[in-house]
Length: 213
Image 1: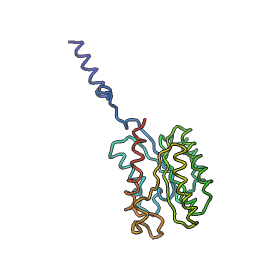
Image 2: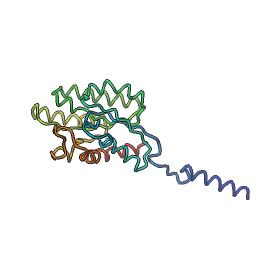
Image 3: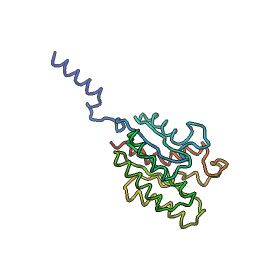
Image 4: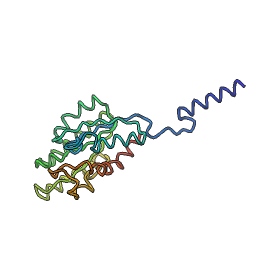
């Protein structure tokens, strides 16, 4: 009887810890997601909590994924600014995943694509050296500086993702950019109604990263 009681207690303990079936949740380890972006991620012109980063945080909670979201995005941020700020953010938050959404302000100012590439590469390597995995979030911009510049800028994300073997969201405004009614009066920043679509563009790339231990 004593032996049977001990075995039953052990089984309850194993079930309680998820070891009885060997099936601990793919999302069981707590994660910190650091979003390093510009106004598109900083809720420019929006009510707090209506941007895609806040929507992502709520979806993580709804799907019972143990993750903390740190939104370190700043309106007007460039790749140079992000590169400068990232080391301190890595030390402070120790993220497991870094989502880099930068480059649009470089392009709007006509800054050299090789410089933006170097900055994005440096940020990705900094994050990896700190033990984080990196997702690149790409952008397209209007042909203000000519088609050649526009195409080189867009191609920068894919080339860098291939080089670094990093997950990539090719264009965060896919399904939004061609719908003027989804933009604020400045025609640059999406309305809150567009941000679920932005999250829908990002989520399928992020989800496998969340599953990976």
